[in-house]
Structure formats: structure tokens, C-alpha cells
Image 1 (spheres, rainbow, N blue to C red):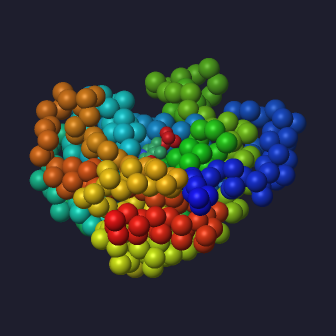
Image 2: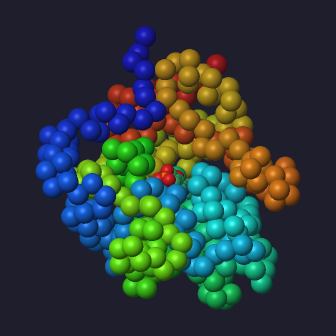
Amino acid sequence: MSEPVPYLDLRAQLKPLRAEIDAAIARTLDNCSFCLGPDVVQFEKDFATFCGAKYALGFNSGTSALHVAMRLLDVGPGDEVVTTPYTFIATSWAISYCGAKPVYVDIDDETLNLDPKLIEKAITPKTKAVLPVHLYGQPFDVEAVAAVCKQYNLPFVEDAAQAHGSKYKGKCVGTFGAISCFSFYPAKNLGACGEGGALVTNDTAFAARAKSLREHGSTVRYHHDEVGYNYRLEGIQGAVLGVKLKHLERWTRERQHVAARYAELLANTPLQLPTVTNGNESAWHLYTVRSPLRDELKKYLDSNGIGNAVHYPMPLHLQKVYAHLGYKAGDFPVAEKAAREVLSLPMFPALTDVQIRRVAEVVKEFFRR
Ligand SMILES: *Cc1c(COP(=O)(O)O)cnc(C)c1O
């Protein structure tokens, strides 16, 4: 019996960094800056530099960064935001938290990202913004989204929660929209030892207001200008993220290597493999294949100890929470088909070649049967 291959191995990633991370946490315990503080400020500078953006602000989650991004664009009750039905629910929460309405358009069958050709038809006088996602790390078609947004004078926000270091035409994602949001949830490409997120922008006024919204709507303590939140990044997480950021480029190269190996080894199977659109670079948050036999394949991988996951089994327009929006099955056929076919294989930087070959072998066995 071969060794099982985990879907994700955070322990393997943490082990070689353990001494550095222990020291970073000890520094926070010494300086007692537990909420924001010097380590967060340093990390914000470093992460802004990494992205090639002017400002990065630490948040206590990607979800809260997205929420504040919507607030910065004054999205409120009665407004609409055009977005993708095929993503993690938090993308839509940002809109709902503001009392606004997510307006979905279907996705592109190749990239599974929001199809920019469908945006125009969804725009109404109530539309306040467009919110696409760089799903699995694959950059969405930034130029096409930017073109339609420009035509209608609408801002767009990048949900880059899965795309730290993904590049669109050579430039890091997170620098194209009015605002971009990242998540540092532990399983993300850059993960905290707990929760975390960032809001990235080149706009000085947005950055100043985001800082205030993250801290109870105040710039001067105990003076509150608007309804704000407690969305601060913890000092310990800033310290940990500062350590891990130094390794991110290498980890991304390792993920790209894993993806390239899968592409070689799985080329002659009936699976539909993920591709990266012309001239772009994915940070390969996930390696997600497609098959009409997904459910059977999943069972086979499970019973052979190969970790796997479905991202995502139900598009957002069919979720119970959004029943009041009035969508029905059949509204977004591309997203609905993807939900039936996708399966994410083990993907993390420390994945060994033995493990990659084992995954490919089990997949091939399944199709040989
Ligand atoms: C993880 C994720 C989020 C939310 O980030 P959290 O840090 O978990 O709040 C938002 N959007 C997408 C696409 C994500 O994958």
C-alpha cells in the first residue's frame, strides 16, 4: 500500500520556518503590539512592494477587506454589484453586508472566471461596481473587464484572495482594480497562523478611509466619523506573515512546478486540465481538473488515500441564502456544469515528485478500469 498523499500539508510548510516564526512571535510578545503595531506596518510595506502597489493595509480577514472595499465605493442598500456566481461565498458577502444586491453573470468555460462579455447586459442604473475573482490563481481577463468598466464609468475590485503573485501580462494582480483584496487564511498561498487579509490600492484617499473603517471609523481615538468595524490585523499575524512573505516567490515557483508536472503526467487522460491564459502566470492556489465522472473519480481518490476537494459544489445563485434573489437552476449553465465536474488535486509547494507521480498514477488507474 502506497503512502497517502494529503490534499494540503501545512505542517510540511511550517517545519523549516519554525525557528524564524517562533522568533517573530516572541518579538510580538516582547513589544506587546497585539493589534496592528510595528510588525503589521512593516508587513504592509513589504506586501505593497510585493504587489507593486502604493498601499497595502492589514485586515483580520479577506472577507473584511472585501467588505471595506465595497464601503469605499459607497455601495449601499438598493445598489447592485456585478459579480461571479462561481467563487467562495465571501465574494458575495461583501456586497450583502452593505445591503446591496449581487448581480451574477455566467463564467468563461475555459478559465471559470467571470465572462467579461456578459457584464454589459447586467449593468443597470443601480450598478455601483464590478467584482470579479482571480479563481484558483488564474488571472481573469483584466483588460476586457477594465474596458467595459471604463465605458460605463464603473470601478472594479479584484478579489485576489487566491492569487498572491499571479501575473497578468507580467504585472502582479491586485494592481489593476480601484481596490484589490487578499486573504491570508492559513490554506491560502500566503497564510497567517490564524486569520488575516489585506486591502491593496494605489488611491491615497481610499487608503486613508480604509484605515479608518478598519478601526471603528476613527482616525483620532474616540472620535468616530462614520460607522466602522473592528477589522484590525493582529500583531502576531503581521509578524508571521512578514516571515512567510520572504518565501512566497519560491513557493509560487514550486506550485508552478507541481502544475507543470501534473500537466505532463495527466496529458493523456480524459481529464480536462487547467490552463493559463495567454501570457499570464497563475500562482496555482488550486490545481482543479474537470471530468463528467467527477463523483466516481473523487470516490476512487478517497479510497486510495489521495487528498482532493471540490471547489465549488454549488454556485452562489443556487445557495439557499440567495433564494430571495430569484435565480434558478439553468440561469448560469457554465457555472452549474463546472460545479458538477471540478475536482482539486493535492497542490502545495512541498509536494514531492513521488507524491505527484502517485496522484497521477491513481488518476490513470481510475480511467483504465
Ligand atoms: C478565501 C477567500 C475569501 C475570504 O477570505 P477569508 O480570509 O477567509 O475571509 C474571499 N474570496 C475568495 C475567492 C476566497 O478564496
